[in-house]
Amino acid sequence: VSDLELSSVERSRASVVRLMVPTDANFSGNVFGGSILSEIDRVAYVTASRHARRRTVTASIDRVDFIAPVHVGDVVDFDACLTWVGTTSMEVWVRVSAEETLGGTPQLVVEAFVTMVAVGDDGRPARVPPLEPASDDERRRFEEGRARAEQRRRSRRRPEVRNDAV
Ligand SMILES: CC(C)(COP(=O)(O)OP(=O)(O)OC[C@H]1O[C@@H](n2cnc3c(N)ncnc32)[C@H](O)[C@@H]1OP(=O)(O)O)[C@@H](O)C(=O)NCCC(=O)NCCS
Image (cartoon, rainbow, N blue to C red; front, side):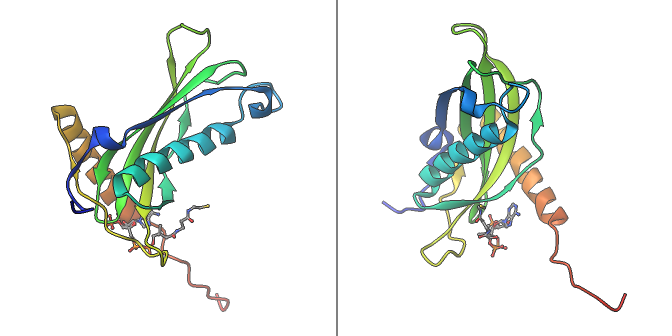
């Protein structure tokens, strides 16, 4: 079986459930944004590495909007799945929802698109299996992911050339 065989969105889906505890809190008693970002990065790593069947690194995280605060005591779900796959990069869609009362309705609090790149033993980008979207929604998300990847490529910051004479 080739490592680069077509692979489904379901195969690499990952989720984490975390109870927010006082060490996750900021000075106001709500959950520290960095604590949420860290978990987003981890679950994105699991999804991307499952798909790539090798180690991956975070290349970028798109704008992250915190739609609602998360509180200590909330049960927070982090759900990750692939939307789009390029040659060595993958876009992971992470949705974070919080349940204030156990058994209550979870509220979406954060959504993020994380680009992960597969790397070989030399640390250089390595090819990943192509993604096979299986439904109309997955096909639509794939096309949207492709457009975002293209947009990122266009807007990527070029290293600045210092010109001390100016
Ligand atoms: C991510 C990394 C491997 C890319 O290496 P590179 O030499 O710039 O690679 P390339 O320009 O050949 O790009 C490789 C792929 O990554 C994508 N990519 C590179 N930089 C990117 C960025 N900032 N955002 C999104 N995608 C990016 C490219 O579009 C390309 O995708 P494709 O193969 O699917 O077409 C390299 O920049 C790196 O190692 N960065 C540090 C990652 C890290 O340590 N993260 C944790 C921080 S603590």
